[in-house]
Length: 229
Image 1 (cartoon, rainbow, N blue to C red):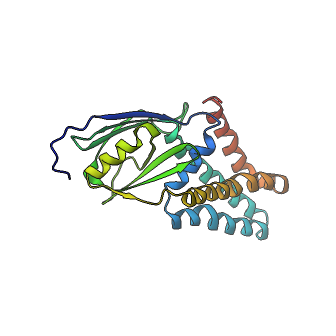
Image 2 (cartoon, one colour; image 1 turned 90 degrees about the vertical axis):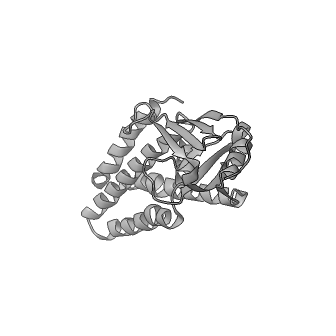
Image 3 (cartoon, rainbow, N blue to C red; image 1 turned 135 degrees about the vertical axis):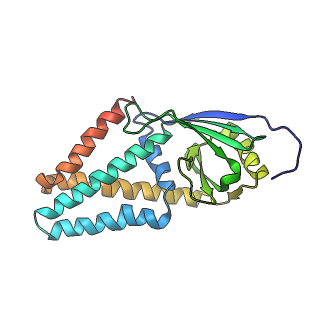
């Protein structure tokens, strides 16, 4: 940590990506928070294998694929709600970061719970910019529970936040490049294909086997639409 005696001003901000218009951005940033191997396994390899199984296994196959899509769709949409509205306060002198996730209304998860994180526990930070929004993904040196892994950072405070991280010996990963952002949109496209377009298409072919997916779609539509446009 820096030995400087200078007092660092507190940094505070609130980032909002709410409503139906913000849903694609929330899902895209949520995809960044997955490890590459885990993401490709859960969101590409597994649904492709189940889709092939569904086409070959008879009546039970489509139901298994539909159930998997319903479960993953629920996990994706609900975990993406942490980007609906986030409040962050960084105390550079104390080396602490306090975050509050204001989840969607309604939401399956609790919200408005303050979590304080010591910057000494943060090992590295990765900044990713999509369109006009930037998010930071924090990596910890050891396993932690109930700590923020990713949140949005407005342009007006990004440079000061980066400097605070450096002062507390947090490594800034230099992969916030256009190519990195392109891969995020590839992930989003694959997610939309396997957990949106294809399941909706299978409703026409296997209507009875698609019941779990349809229930998930209509249920979460009610959640998202209540957030407004």
